[in-house]
Length: 223
Image (cartoon, rainbow, N blue to C red; front, side):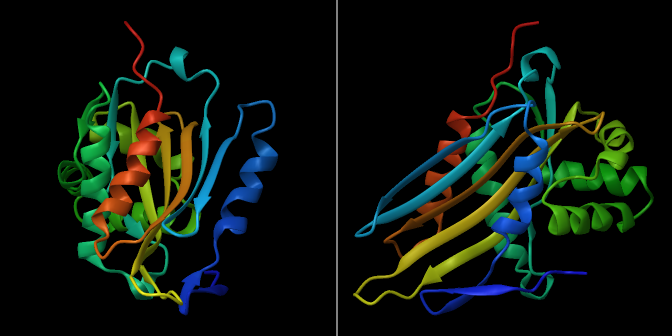
């Protein structure tokens, strides 16, 4: 069953998903890694919050290639394909500096369609990411085999748009969830972040958010 609890932010209804998403992982991550929260705020210009987790043995897991999956929107009735593509493109631009072999979302989609004879598997993957914020561990082996990669990185857009403020000037805002899962179904990296900037364009918000995440993404170790 889809959760439809909502809260209002600056007059706009947005999905209240953070507690639903984080609580299970805070509990189960004890002994597996360290949550590294980063919070700062300037109410006159910018507000941002990041929660990032990295598998403590990431360096030994020999991840060399990653498929970036197409971004999905949490609320199915609010899906905006262009906005999803906007998020995917911004993420790809920020993370292409990481020295992995990347498979682009378009190529990844084509590979899954070819391997599984149609869109059904790709749509099932999107629905799983929409529901849980990550790829299903039980499907990761077959998906990575089809993609030809060691891991897959999913993106879920929880909010993307403008907020109403009491003073003049628009506030652009984004809330995004990302997760890296390997071929054995292990969660290797996960991030939840938000960014709000006094801007008319959404692009600077995504650029700022993903640049911060890139700084906290595991680097490739030498062979």
